[in-house]
Length: 440
Image (cartoon, rainbow, N blue to C red; front, side, top):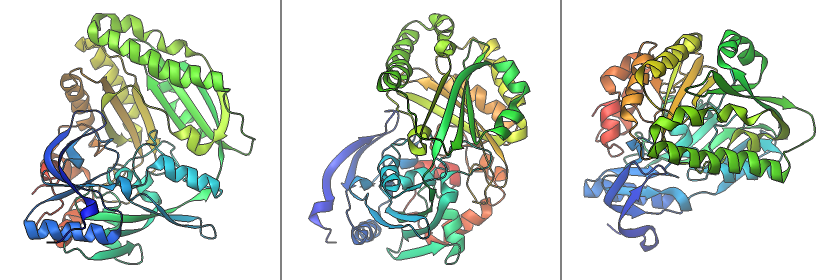
């Protein structure tokens, strides 16, 4: 089959951002047009090969691993249209959130909520159920109002709540298992500023008043520092106040030097001599109080230089305090030396079948291990706690679940499976990860 020469590359290898997932000897395609996406799918079907698309590779799981044909969307990243009357944007699947947010800001628009990483592509973010925090706000996938998709028969399908609604609902968090997303249309809001207060709190006091913190702030999150009784808190609230960002020096000191380079040096030292970690951890809560105000997209996302492995679980919001206290006791009793804080966030429910917040208000507990250290014992202990609450793993973050353990945790699991069987019966868009978590 004839494939455009400019989208075909030699056999290549690929690795994700954290370096824990690799693909070897795969055929790489870099499409620039929707027609080329269709040609790649036709080529794959004719060759009896499987296809996986990747964006920025920020998932820690093998969800993006291509075993035969790798579709790199980095050249498929244009903004197609901005509709200021309807507050919507349509963009190609490979656009990174950082680029998209800048275009939106220039047009006086913004995404209503974001995660804390801006490197992801829009397709990758929604496909893995990426979210931010804020009990009145849902994850990014629920901001999607329409999709264009290339299916296994190479047809292009438009879907929304009004057209191909069942496919649309499932594909918003589709794990890349339903087809290649071509374009994404998002519902936006007028651009807004966020006032930020960052400060340490005693974790016991914080948990006692957690419902108040969550309900009284637009976007509340905190980071419990293992081996200490402290949590680092972040309160982001919408404001009509003018922008008052950190000074360039303060920003560099706080966000670049302390949160990245200094923290990275502490992690390196902890990896070399883990017994030092409890003493090193005591330096984190000494960061003091910061207050500033800036455009929302600049506040939501943080710079990430230090590499790590991550696992995150969504549990019912009302179980958050109990679950976190169990994690704290487990860490105290286990002898684990942990140099990364435990992150806790909150979101509203949605009705997307495989969303981590599907049909329930959710709290998220995320744990991290510095790159190069063994994450398995710690992550398995945390996962065993989350299982008690029908925990749902972030699809792009490490976990040890399979289709049998996951199915009972999603009210619309069978709906997704029905759509998958309809649009990809031969599993053109499958890989070993999707076979494990969704079944063959």
